[in-house]
Length: 382
Ligand SMILES: Cc1cc2nc3c(=O)[nH]c(=O)nc-3n(C[C@H](O)[C@H](O)[C@H](O)COP(=O)(O)OP(=O)(O)OC[C@H]3O[C@@H](n4cnc5c(N)ncnc54)[C@H](O)[C@@H]3O)c2cc1C
Image (cartoon, rainbow, N blue to C red; front, side, top):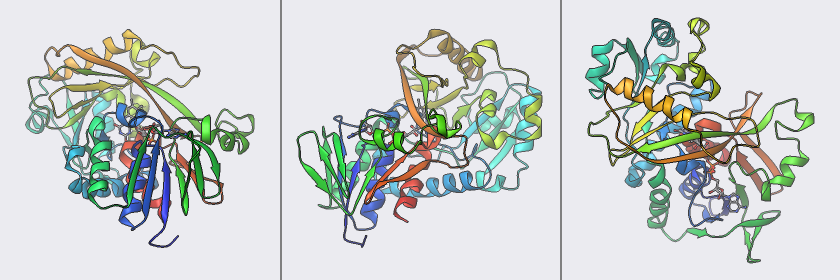
């Protein structure tokens, strides 16, 4: 593939869109297919957290740090993404949580995470909206925020401004593959030096036969539980909050979900509350540019997933958010669920496989996909 080839990308989520951005940076022409009028999958349903702080030491942290660097550079040409280097605060409400934060900040790579443990006054100095009761927090300056509902169109607009080499084809579903080509539902073939399938958590359809034939799904008997699986999360968004949150916020339950906190003190955390444990909940809280609060999340692993959202998890998350902010929350305006694709049972950070000559499938970044997408795209082209 030279500097003047053509890439066909299937999937208009953040992974497909970042592949388009990185391809254009290499001077490659791009045809970009999306079956919906716009991205509708995990990429528009997430928090927009560009999250470096919680990443596992080694390859995962390196990928997130590189991605954070790329996000900042890419967003400079696409300010509509809402990218802002806001940092985050992970709040400790008990001595046991504080002990985990204190050990995490001593990790040899803490410098890359730009972390520091603050007492309650220090937390409020960084983020005065946190008026609740807590014992301290981990300030992570490397973390950033983007706007999930705006990022995809903003990135595409910057690609379109960049010249005629970018073709966006919404409403086009890829239904058949051939080496270096895909056919859409209208029968038209789109050909390139490389086809990149970024079809998200869709394990049937165009990627389905390949995933089944290679035993790539964790549910395949021959996989031994290692491979791709899907995870469903519940989220909500409030009306605008009158205060201003200067950082994103996580609660102590997040220490159980992010591998950076796999330090000796983690074993001394008491069990989560019954509701949090049943829903594998952690509080993440991000203020959107319009002042509203995105609040989540839960984790559901067993398929078939429910088609509806359950209220008890929301009650728990809203109570946690109100406790940290020390005030009542605005009314909830939206509730939704999202599904992402993740690799499990392996040290891989995501899944990339050759489907046939000139066709590659990239999926499975899990809960780090919004963060890592530009670095994953860079690795595809490397
Ligand atoms: C609730 C939630 C919160 C999250 N929070 C964060 C976060 O804050 N930070 C973070 O780093 N990550 C987060 N994640 C993870 C992140 O959102 C995902 O890893 C990422 O969005 C995956 O991007 P994607 O492009 O692979 O998938 P998607 O966004 O799902 O995009 C796939 C696209 O492919 C299209 N498609 C599928 N098949 C075809 C076909 N045959 N032809 C044409 N188009 C097709 C679909 O319509 C879809 O638009 C979160 C995920 C969820 C669900």
